Length: 256
Picture 1: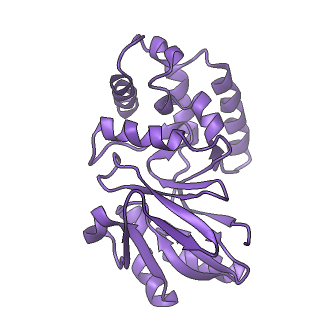
Picture 2: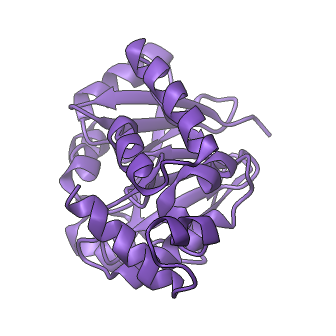
Picture 3: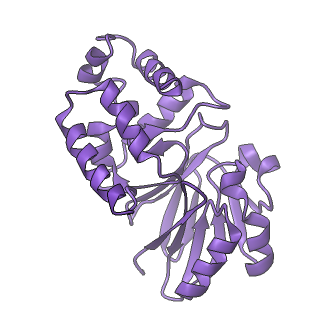
């Protein structure tokens, strides 16, 4: 089985599209291809063949390239059964617990509602690669638009259970802003302060800060730490229900 080869395409002001080549015949998937022209240009440059689009959720800055790419490449569009009506060109509807096989790679579908009601994430288990759209960011999480804070917290807990070496291939470059917020929550977190310096250096050089790793996120991302005593104490909610703690942290970010 060929190793998964991931290529990251920055588009718009802060979006990322991912191409993932899954076999030795240069076949690949595109995850959340918002910009069709940028996706087509990358495919041409790499010499890769687009077989599938994987959509994490229905927002246009994730599905905007679906129709154009399908017309150009004849690819199969995979998306959430709960968002099929709003996912352009969808061919295959999947939900939590389903799986795909691509070039010998098993791709598990993880239901991660909260940002949208039918949001899903794609977990390439052997490659330790998670494509999580707008559920989990480096030191952040998506706004809760269609779901509830409890749903988002449950989704984040599911993702947190993945191995520490998991690459978090999220869809936006929000890390600098998330650093500032995270420090407002846990200013004495030594791991967070170290990560803040790393992020500042990367952005000063114009480099991406993602993918990050799950093990690191568990130490520095306040949205994964609603049940961590130090985080609870830092916001004056020691010993309180983890969902309530997460809800408070999410509210603080919304108004930060």
